[in-house]
Image 1 (cartoon, rainbow, N blue to C red):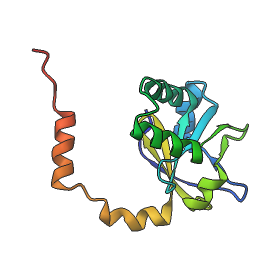
Image 2: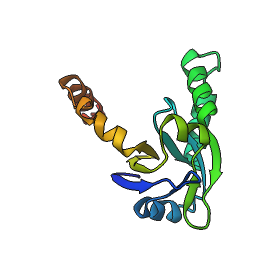
Image 3: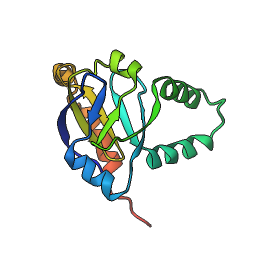
Image 4: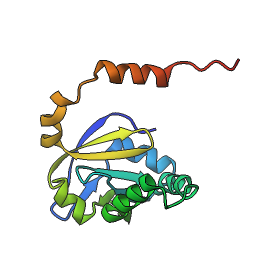
Length: 151
């Protein structure tokens, strides 16, 4: 499970060195292949390929005539590329995403449980005041986290 925030840099060739804490988890699971994509062009989602393949299986159960699935697949295919980690622990971010999300220098890499999210650090920090936990979000989270009784 990926958790936490690890500042990182994207080099001039568009390669992201995977933060050590995340790299340890990936190495332990023998993961070297990734699907890097986005649903909004504002950040990159770095999916270990086995996790992305699970997502694909879930989506395959639904008709591609489903508008939400179709939109999701269009976006994740447009922004997405399958990549392999190099021998220095780096992954190449897709060029389209590097441009739209401004992933060209200082970034922050967030653990999002089963994948990593990469955002331009400066833009993300400027957006933080608008990302507060509202009362509605707290209520929704409480519903999600409520213990479920088996009776």
